[in-house]
Length: 185
Image (cartoon, rainbow, N blue to C red; front, side):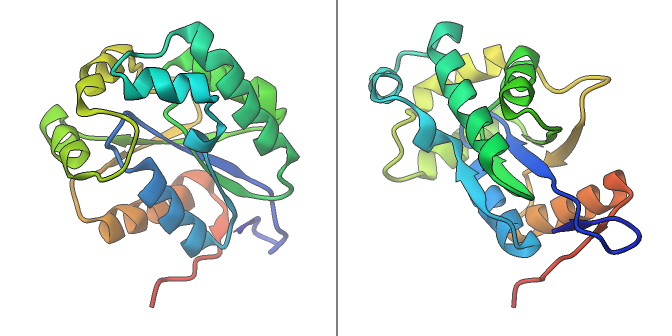
């Protein structure tokens, strides 16, 4: 939970974003556990047509993504208090769409790494509908958060526990708020 200096809970919504293989789900789950917040998995909001399209190796278009982003944003807006969300949010316009649909401020945690690291991670995944062949289209679509966007960049090169710890530290530092943290253990 996020608290202000007086110890009052302050709702926050953190979108863990990045391309396929960046670890959105595993890092999001780690953050949710550490911060005591619920987590929404963006992939679960895809309509079946999107899943079939991606499973066949066909990249999604903006028109495919709009209803998906609206559904995620609506779920964020309907979740009281803080929430962690795993969602690619590859373009600035997608992030803006999420904020508009959520009706509340969002903080984006951008999971970043080299193409080689991402490809290796995708190659090691089991049972995910996103084939490795779509990584290049995701990288081509990616617009890393820029000036004026509420976003933090986290390098995903280290082991998961270190990435989660770095994310918690970055959130604490950037927010100016006290973040109640329950270290694993």
